[in-house]
Image (cartoon, rainbow, N blue to C red; front, top):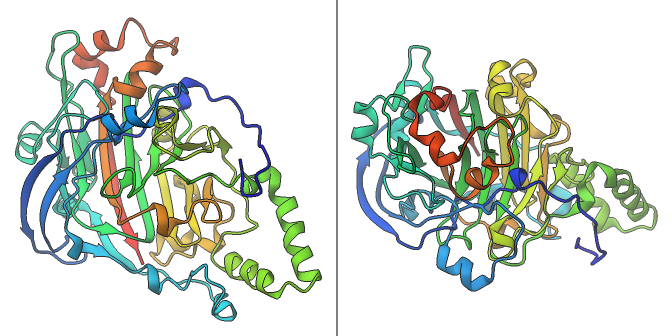
Length: 439
């Protein structure tokens, strides 16, 4: 259903394309204390107490009752929940993107974004905590604490300045056992802003489930944004929201509906609906509104308490936006804008990164159509998304990759058998050039 209540027929999602929230599979929370780290813009200053709660992703479209989901909680845990409210960058009120009618005349100026936090090079890991709890998505991994991840060579900065996070590829384990891996969560959180991931290469392979995502406290009430995610040997990235009940993907922003939307905007101007015309002008200045997203809708209900926590997913049409195909092109940049207009995600291949983004003066309104866009018209961001922490992890098998394994003809045997052999995970590693947050 979209905003008008008219039924929309959506394509049936392939189980291998249906993401399950990493925050929805475990109820046990883990608490730890992180000492303060002092740094410049690149390494963040914060004193926090960490409380973590899980999250997980459904792998089929089988309906799960709200009671069942309440018992299993979210996709990968509440992202190191650091409960550092003093670190929440509550800048949404200053974004000049209010949905209120008041002040529409002043809403047409293009936003200027400036770097707030940058995670890069030798200081990359200073801004993150290591989540060493059990994988809430029931994957066959042991997430390591920071000292173990460093000493075992699963987290480090390489000679090119890339932050590397690996799955263990040296030790043989028993079939069905857990393999060492890494999951990190940012110490700072963000209520709004532009989050830019510059990735050189990412994990892929049979049974491998990597993700770059954000999550708020008290999942799913604080929301979850899956920015770069997939399983196995896919070549197309998937973008997904997981929220409390009430959030829907507005399907009128799809490419197919663009002309209809523009006609509607023109009609509003013609009939003298100045308030609507001003809103259209404001949204256009911020890079949204009549601009359609180009991805393929997989599911439209973002409610994490139903449909096995599938969320509302959009598939990137670019066949080089994920996995080995992305790596073969030298990686790329994923930019996510969260503000009161909604949530938008762009992907730029390495050879097509906008100059303004490369010069750290991004202007999303000049980037063209995003790959994915969830409008606040049917999912108000202020209602469904709290301060978001950035999470990066790689799990194996589990709720999504495990169920999708058998449907991939390129993957032999079972996922549990796959995990036993370390040589299967030589390509299961992140190489991240930077993560930059703009306000």
